[in-house]
Image (cartoon, rainbow over the protein chains, first blue to last red):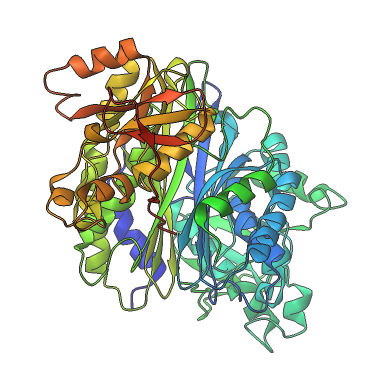
Length: 309
Length: 309
């Protein structure tokens, strides 16, 4: 069995980059020409029954909500503003219209909150329910943030608290669209992505794209209440949950130390959302850990991120 | 079991139209703001193993080709030019990387022919293989063709030959992008859509959207060789195959009689593709048939189109 990251890597090498495209495969969204001042952002994400939620256990509103939210999170991670959604559904024979209506209802409600309208879609018969949602958004050209822009010495920051999302938050999280918009408006964000496969794995991706390494301060990792309670995938090890659990859908980003200081200076975090500096970008390669910012002893961790594929 | 058309109708009523959007749900593609001279077109279509093809029988190149081609056909039906594609795959555990690579290879080859580049995507685990492809395109504002523009007295035209597509052509058809571009460049096309659910059903959709009826000339229906051989869904009735079989992916469109005459005057059809006048739009409602253009006796046909959902 081939892993998703390996497969995406292979596909990316196989599909050539095209002319006139600011960014294709390999970021949270594709970055395409729109008008003089803006890029068009396009992203697609799919949720499948039994993999990303359980049809028999989850309320249809929350399924519809999640199908859209994960895409809004991708647009946010580019510094962009979502606008339109297309919804492709695979519908098993037994599914009622009432269920489908409630699915759209949950999606519409979240869409309203983030100015995103369903403008089209497609219905197919399938054995297993799936929802493949495409979101189009836009971003001012000078506000675009990619994964590959981290600079040596940058502070690495993360919003929210990590770990244990699969216990419930993955269905109810608020995509960080407003926080990202605030960040790119007021600061120079050098690199950004959303956390979907766990901090360990995603930070490695961000740093590889930027051709940098990272030093992570263990005592700065924001651990969620769920992880602290032992309800994360790391069970009795909340830190492991925070580092390795998937589907946090928080923002992971880097900025200069000066900008980071100003971002962290807000009394209420980032528009009410907690924000933490968890480490710094280094000239080397790989992710190393140290107990805290002052401690010099560095070590590796054997844990891997979440493999949702 | 609820039919697809009924379900789409319900969803369409349930999801409100949004401001600033030229056309949302209910056409071949959504029509969104792009720049001063162009609209952005967005469409998504999904193919599912066992429904739209068979993984065990179909070459992966043709599966990839079809997944893109059905979307290019949608962009063509708006008078547009496709540009970018996002590919969301549901991959069952046993599927090899070699298969997936061949799938992308088929898609890439067709994309090259129509200047459409894969710029992103998503991979999920699923029991049943599916490919949900989104295509973004653009259209000059004054060249956009919707479904709702047919005028009373318009000639109704169709490209190619109809029926029997499921015997093979649904995997190998050429999306009518070039033909549509030629049509909107040289003529005033009042309404257009691509044929996916059979002429009977799709013509009914086109005329309802335009709030018109239609008179169809039976002897003008272009029947494919496959249907004539009895290999269509209508079996011994080739005309039934031509009228009811799905997945023709030809263009169905209307234009004034004068424009239609000029379109039909081309010796080699439309850029080498056959084109026929099959009827005319009427002020009334519903689709009525007559033996030929001259014959006055009108009748209904009890056949229904293809229900692929």
